[in-house]
Image 1 (tube, rainbow, N blue to C red):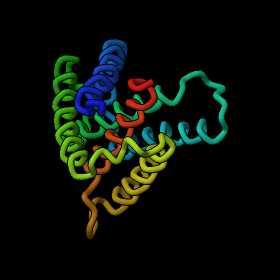
Image 2: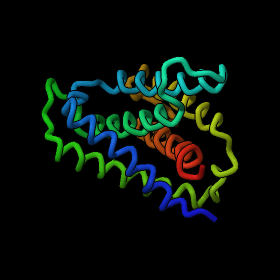
Image 3: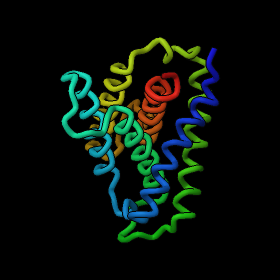
Image 4: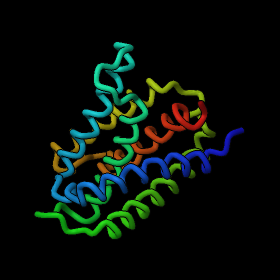
Length: 180
């Protein structure tokens, strides 16, 4: 049996390396993004993955794995924004942004461990297309919660949805990159 915790760490190392490179090139310009805009960015990534899966061809170059990495990183940015609020300008150094990134990864990892225990690694039997559909569903749920300004009756909230999207993207990356 594969070690999910180790595989999670391998995927997050890959995602963090790209985040760090983009942080070098662009700084923390994403600090000005509102949660709704980040939800839309995740939608764009997930919708493109579904399009690639449905059409079977790629005319841009980036593949499914690249888009799942984008979902992971936008989900982490979203969690940072929920915790710190939206800034009017870039207000976080690269070191601070990476520390926040690592903090959010730790929180999501803990959630994954708890859920993986309760669900008995059922994700391993799922297809990558199912992760894509679940992420899209979570995006639409998040948009609805945003439209309701968070006034929900039974929802776990936007943060829980971002965390789930991140974990589904990690599971897809384990199958696409680590186990291949």
